[in-house]
Amino acid sequence: MKKYLLPVLTVVGMGLGILIGSALTQNANAQRITFRNGSWNIETSKVDRLLQLMETAYVDSLNIDSITDEAMTDLVQKLDPHSAYIPKEDLEMVNSELSGSFSGIGVQFTIQQDTIRIIAVIAGGPSEGVGVLAGDKIITVDDSLFVGKKINNEKVMRTLRGEKGTKVKLGIQRAGTAELLYYTITRGDIPVNSVDAKFIIDKSPKTKIGFVRVNKFGETTYREFITALAELKAKGATSYIVDLRENSGGYMEQAIRMANEFLDRGDLIVYAEGRAYPRYEAAANGAGRFRDVPLVVLIDDFSASASEIFSGAMQDNDRAQIVGRRSFGKGLVQQQMPFADGSAIRLTVARYYTPSGRCIQKPYTLGDQEDYQKELLERFDHGEFYSADSVHFSDTTAYYTKSGRIVRGGGGIMPDIFVGRDTTLNTPWYNRCVNLAITYQFAYRYTDAHRKQLSQYKDWKSMEQYLNRQNILREFVDFAEEKGIEPNEKEIQKSKPLMMRLLNAYIVRNILGDEGFFPLFERDDEITKKAIEIL
Image (cartoon, rainbow, N blue to C red; front, top):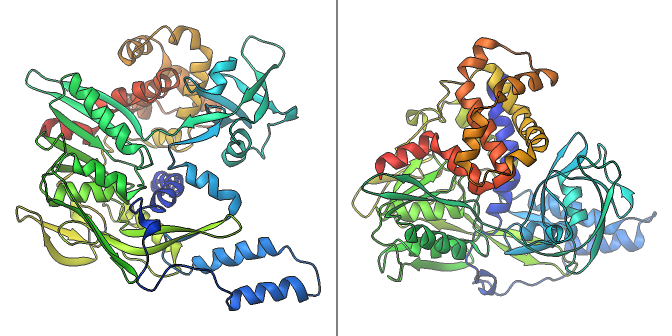
């Protein structure tokens, strides 16, 4: 069972991201498209009549809204894995994942030991303005105790987010202060960033390589992306790595605009069509500012939807080398349609195709979402995460790139250069520590205990040098043992490079954010190193 634990946890952790990312893979103007069979409208149907009868004639009183939501969910689950019914109370939160901003208090948090702990305070946000600090613990909300086993991420987000201009009172516990500190915070607009990090990753004598990591395709992704490229160019970047690993997708239009920056006029980017969805084509307009720069795109098993549109356009036009592992395989287009009660359905209305004509959607059975999600575990079990020879596509048709190279459809984007997972330094001790999130917990505790000292370092390199002088590994081993993981000295020494990389990166992130985390973490990443070698 141990060999399944890591991929199981990874799939569960990414599952929500895949659903959110897949939900809006369409052109931003798609809601204004009239289908061939006419505009979408709501008319009384057999289901509507049944619900009316239940509400008016049933022997006992019923919560008809709850029954309706359950019925809608059950109906949509009979369709493909990416169509979804979204109840009114969930719609705002789901939409905010891809919007340019949401209204809240402006903190990043984690839940440890049934307590909300603030990891970072967003610069310029409402919490920073009143004096909330990283490391603070939220004990009360509006004078009510807000700790315990019933606290989860969703409940915290529902509580801390809210309409702009509304207020929330927090009771904060701070290290070194005995009594609770109370802050009344007025909610404001909090940006939702798509670009995690941008930096020069290699400074060889002949070239500077710019690295940009994009975590989703939301409303502001293109603007953030082109700004990142411009900043790196100003620093001397002459080639680029675009990292789309674990990017579950989002708006098709944003992927199209990004791809346009690298392609020549007339190059096809993507097309989409469905039974009632008129064919839509997107081609480059020739105005891209980075059409001639060397480019590598990184993908993995969780790169889906709009990530695959961008990667497929680069691959089919022979514009970039795609490096990593086979992508998720999501080639369906959803359109969001509202209901009068504030809920909505995201219905699959078309398939999209890469320039060579391939649909990269992996096989599915209507109504069978469980097996669809398990497909990633099957890839792992077949050895695909480690070897390109284990990759199999459902579509045996040969498709051709602009230069005549053969590419395949029916199951994601196969990278031009496959880089499997390197498990050379993995041990059972290391895997247990990572799978149980002991590394993350330790990094937070260490940061909290040494925040004043760590805050003196303003860049990741100097902070890493400081951390390497400390006896962090031994502290971590003792911490893990407290959590029930027995030390094994042989395994500890074998996995030391992996563990120190992870611990240092997490601690740096707690102080410097993603702009500190990713340069440190990517330096020793095998896929990134292959991309640097190519460029």
